[in-house]
Image (spheres, each protein chain N blue to C red):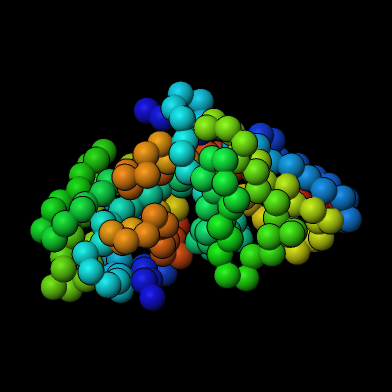
Length: 112
Length: 116
């Protein structure tokens, strides 16, 4: 079945540091890939998405590129801020079903 | 953007009682709503999918008689946890989708249930 694997957290960085959160997936066909962010006490918000190979999703300084050859969708940001502290979920949705499959989440803490 | 609300945001109930959680799409009509459960420091696990006017489809291992889902209108779905037990304590999150062809799901803020 479909699955998503993320690097284990927590990840702790200083403000303005470079961020990478690895995400790899297993799926049949050509899924769409997503990153969601969950701030403390809140629900999930869509951060960015990519629907086909080599697409790059970007939003709020975050980027992720859909790499079919490595089945990866790593999240990057060049300079993190304290306000980026949250839990980040990588997710996929295949083209046959209507359900998402979420990774376990990676908690990011950014220190001033 | 599309907004999904949940009520209540937090609820504490006694073991053996039932509790209802509401999920509303505020500015769009949701043909499909999803209910997820999130354990502490873990990912979301899909519990069930409900389409307006039809019975919910439950994921394997989810007891449909314990977690009653009603999607009576295009803007409201409810999850009722019946005969709650402490192990049902969790963060419950709903999401809503406007169009069956769309991948976009809009998530509610979640409801933290504590069963004492």
